[in-house]
Image (cartoon, rainbow, N blue to C red; front, side):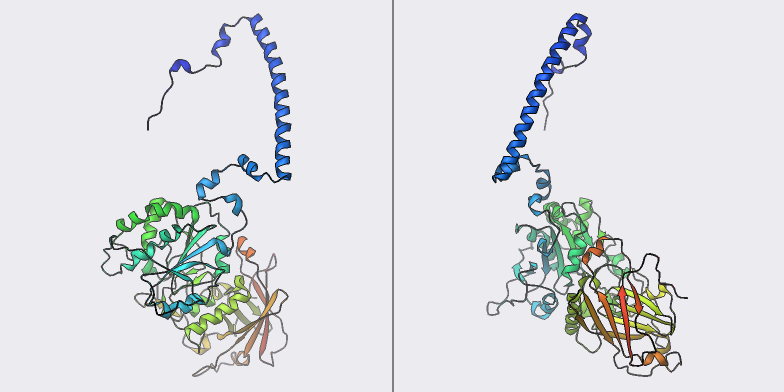
Length: 506
């Protein structure tokens, strides 16, 4: 586009005329200017009073159509909708979920989604590759479905992947183009992803949806990150894209799909697109891809100090709770979450100095009892009860792990959630019991008193999600009941740490 340049003589030099004006003329001009300014200021004063009166009159008599004239609309242009009408804090209604699914597999996996989905509360769709059979009614407990557009025109050259990656990558675009109102975040996940929506809201509330944010986390297995990327959000663990970023992404996504045709997964293709846009991944530790095998216990028993947002790949690991199916395990964890979302899986540990015991609590899941004093660094490190995703090796992982011994005298006693009781006064009591152990138990005399403990009762105040807007800090705990625990029940209280408090063994 060319821009018209005015002739140079048309520019006014404010200093030039004064060089040739005689002093007398200058004084006359100055007096005239002074009188002019007095009149001008009077007009401004009258105009200001009139404008103030007009605005007050409009407010009192409901002239809202005139009030809007005086409000800047620059923020509307950047986000695509009127920010003034949506200035309150982010809540679940502002999130649009896009779940990647298949018509043939939905009935086998829908229990994962239905464990957390709330009809008429959560918003979003399951995106299918084809319409479900006409003779089967769609479950009312499932999200509504959409059928993805035809993607046969796009390239896909990954020799070991599936073309479904193209379809699933476009869920972001097709969700955005539905044009639904009042959407601040688009959240993507798989049909076997279990979300914890209240905690998702807590995380997203920290960020301005009018800015371009790409939020999620990496794989737990280093081998996966090396093959795919350290800089992308893994789709099974779920990721969130702000409305402002989605508006840019949908313009270039189709081109990205073809440019990154050799990429394996939908999340990898979107990650490539983010590189072109220039928006880095904002990592949040509560998104769990769960690229692990065998027993997930170690990950869940020493959760980072972050709200639990998602769990994925649960079909590929052992049930979360012993003696249950995975579906039953998920329901049990979700029920605990409903009682205290922000506290779910939050890790606390403390010492019983009268008996030199260490107690580690993963709220809503498990307790570990050590009949010795164990330092905090060790207690905070997850046991390696799992293997890597692809090679089934002992590592490496993207976080510290410690060895879980097969010797019963080197292992803590493990207790699992029984139930959570909401007291109705802003607090809960959760109970944990030790399952019957097959095989030999430790005969060491140090273990004998600990073996008499058969359950824990844990009291705690319900955590507000506002706590996640503060600097993260692990909560503290203390053993409440005195004596030798003759009844075999230990009472533990979870609480915020005092200002100078630390978990330091003697």
